[in-house]
Length: 229
Image 1: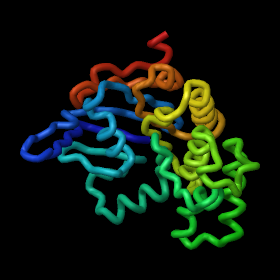
Image 2: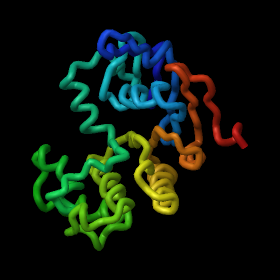
Image 3: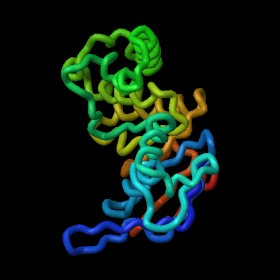
């Protein structure tokens, strides 16, 4: 599904040049569950941004379904994100004046989807994540785990091929975080969703079929669950 070849990315922080990624190669297959791990500043988030078409490399190629998205225009990247990629963030990023259903279906509003279809699709997704009885609840009326489930439902509303999660349990207690990871694993195994997470948490990484260790912008190890056993 995704192939990165010799990817380089450099940022300027003031007058300091930061090489976030250094000649990185990575393959992610359709239906795979991948965890990207490494210390702070290792390039994990930059790698996720490039995989999710939020950014493009300075050098190298990024193929998604055999298309070189590293040469896409901003509009083409935006369309790609809207159609094929779902994002889940540590801070949930819900709109506090909207209820669960409205948060989930907001992306559909911008696409001109009818109100009836928005309701049906949003309700079905909230039921999928175990929140069928929380449609009218606003974020302040939900627990942290429930808010993250709403965020996951929102990420799925456009039926993406790829789900990216940046520290999805970072703001949650251990038991709640385990529930979120169980949900992501279920989406991967039963729904065939390709899932990529960035995490510091070894327990979260343990859910993945492939774990990619990145240090100083380079992959130092990539192993499957079988190899790690």
